[in-house]
Image (tube, rainbow, N blue to C red; front, side):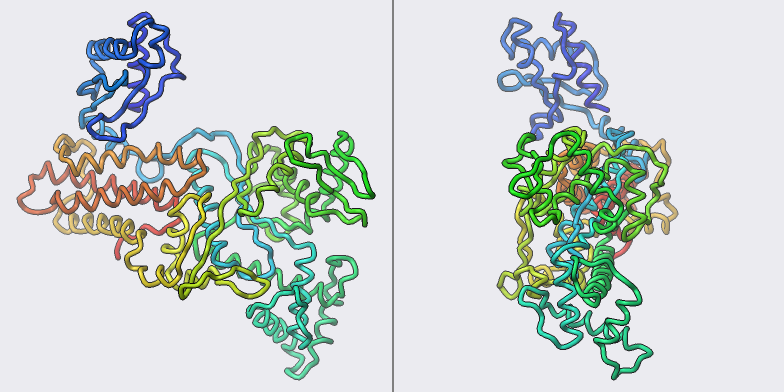
Length: 593
C-alpha cells in the first residue's frame, strides 16, 4: 500500500539524518484540500525536539532526503505551514489501485484481515415479542446488520443474535389482552390495545374453531388447547389460557418481526429465548459463581450484587425481597453464556431457533460481546459491564452501542411509538410505502448516536429522488455500458495489460481517488461502529461516476481504442466498488432501472 511505502520512506529519511524514528508514531493524513497533495505527514513536528532543530527546518531536510530516495509514484514532496510534509503523487499510483480493484474484484477488494482469528457476538433489535416491529425498530435492524457485514468484511467471525424476552409481566399482559379480545372481556388498562391484537386474536380464534364449528365457544376451546399443550406459568399463578395465548402470540409476533426484517434484508444467526436460558440452569450457575467470588450480599431481604465496585453508580438487586429474580440476573447469565460458543449453541437448542452452523462441541471463545441498545439503556451498560468483569471477562470484551431513537412523522404530526396503545407505524408499513432499499438507506444516512427524524409522507413522495436511487442508478448505468460494449464487439472488461496512462483527467482521477479510499472507509466504519460512513462513501463514488460519465465518453466512435479500454476498466472498477458498498449497506445493486 502507498501509505506503508510513504511511511517507510519518511522513517528512512529520518534515519538518514541520524534520527531513530518509531514507526508507530508516524502518521499520514489526507489533506482536506486537493492542492495540499494526496498525503501529509507531521513527522518533522514529532521529531523536531529529538533532532534539536525547528520543525520546518527538519521538514525541509526530510524532503531533500526523499528526493534523493526516488520513491515510486512520488511527483514531489513539499514543506507546508509549521513543518508538514505534503506528498503529491503521480496518477500511476491510482492506476495501480485500479489494477488491484480489477484483480481482486468484489469478493476481495477492501476485504481486510484485522479481525483474523477473533469472534464477535452482535445482538441488535431484540424487541419485546408482544407485537409487530415498529418502524423505528427498523433503524436498529439496518444498523446492526450493516455493522455485522463490516465486521465480517474486516475478517471477524460474527454471530448475530436476537434476544427474545419471553418471560415477565409484559408477556402476561400480552396474553391477557389476546384472551380479552377473543372472549369479549375488557382489555386490562395497562394491556395491549393496538389493532393488531384484535387481528391476531381473531386469527387464533379462527384456528381454534377450525374443525369445531364457527359457533363453538372460544373460551372452552382456548382452555382445552391450553390443557393439551401445557405451559409453564409466566409468572406463577397465570391462568393456563393466558399462558397459551401468550405463547402463541409471541410466536406470531416473532414470525411477523422476522418477516419484516427479512424484507429489509436483515437476518439473524440465532434467536435466543430468555425462558430457555432460565430453564437451562444458566442463571443459577452464574449466581453461584458470583456468590462464590464474594460479589453477592443480602440486605433488607433482597439479594444484591456489588456492581458499584466496578464502576456502576450503585449496587443492583438480583433477587427482590419476595424471592423473585429481577431482569438483571437472567441478563447476566445470558451475556456470560455468549462468551462460550459451544455453551451458547446448547442454549439455542432449547430456544426459539437454532439455524446457524455453531456446534455443541465448539470450544471457541467469543472475543467481544456487543449489544446495540436504545437511548433509554444508558444506565444498563455499566451494570452489565460490571457483572461480566465479576465473572472473569475482561473489561474490553463487553461493549454496548447506545443509539438514539427515531422520530416518525405523518401528516405533520409526531407519531408516538407504542405497541401498548397501538399508536405505531409498523416497519412493514414503511417498507410497503417506500420500498426496502429506500427504508434501509434512509436509516443508514446518519450516525446511530444522532436522533433521526423520518417524515413518512415526505419519504414516500420523494422516493424516486431518494439518494439510494442516485447510487443504484450509477451501478445500473455501468451495467448498461457493459451491455453496449458487448453489443459493439468490445470486451466489457479489457485485458489485464490495458494501458491506463490515459486516465489522467480531472473526472477520471476523482473517480480513482474515490475507489482508492474504500479500504480505509471500511476499516474506519468498522472501528468506529459507523456504517453511515459507507453510505457517505457510496454517494460520493456515485457522484464521481456520474460526473465522469457525463464528461468522459466511452463508446463513441471518435474515442481512441486505448482511451476507450482504459475508461471501460475504470467503469468496471467503479461497479466493483459500488457493489461492495451497497452490499455492506444491505441494499440491492441493480443491473437495470
